[in-house]
Amino acid sequence: MASTKHIISEIPTCITLYSDGTVDRPRQAPLVPPNLDDPNIPVSSKDITISQNPNISARLYLPKNPTKKLPILVFFHGGGFFSESAFSKLYHEHFNVFVSQANSIVVSVEYRLAPEHPLPACYNDCWNALQWVASNSAENPINPEPWLINHGDFNRVFIGGDSAGGNIVHNIAMRAGSESLPNDVKLFGAILQHPYFYSSYPVGLESVKLTSSERDLFTSVWSFVYPSAPGGIDNPMINPLGEGAPSLEGIGCDRMIVCVAGKDGIRERGVWYYENVKKSGWKGKLELFEEKDEDHVYHIFHPESENGQKLIKRLASYLHE
Image (cartoon, rainbow, N blue to C red; front, side, top):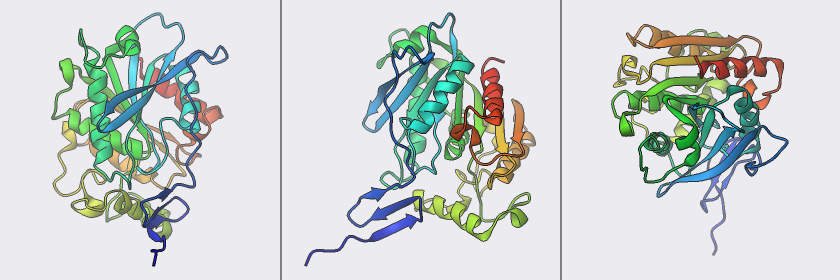
């Protein structure tokens, strides 16, 4: 008798893993091709392969007709570690707007997703992507990328990400504090946009602001994407102050901006993270940006909105300060 396909695990309305190994992502935005030579878009984009084993790729964005060396932003998309893509319509449209204003190169990383590839796979992929970017500062890189070589300023390498991507930014910045990048490239700055952190205990005003369903969601996402995490929801990768977590003093960049939104369920975590970095003894320049009347990653969903433009302009400026 043939076995019947059934649900192994799920986050309702977000993702379902079935017994035959298939995965359903009902909220995934459609994928779109890059725009290398579209005369109606002031930004060129193309897709490149960083590694074939493991499979890591990226979409690169470059302003048309650059006249000087540009900051490099290595970006890690959000989506709870289990959804979205560097090639999705959502992020592609966002970066067409962002890069046209930021006058920078963006390397939007396509890392492996859970549950097919449980964490910590994505952290390793994103570290490998950052290493690859830095390797292009050498005279004869193994896997050369002309846009980086010809137009990138390797003294201004930033990492950035939204939501789960903001969490990745923290973990990559910590790794950069203890491991060297190729050719002595230094990580200049980090941009955390509505970062996803959590723990077994509430912080800030979470005990009164969050509903039980929101608390359950934040916990269940982590257990879904990293079921074997030592310490569970207090693992240092999701709780930067969890048992055994390295000191935030060791963040491996010179500057950091943490962005939060007042109506966002994880707003308290972003402020909590900012405050703990501030008192950790870290010697870098730290900034908090808050938009009180907006919700989670509003600038990704609505980059042309008034408040979306406000944040994009701030981050565009940040890359050149």
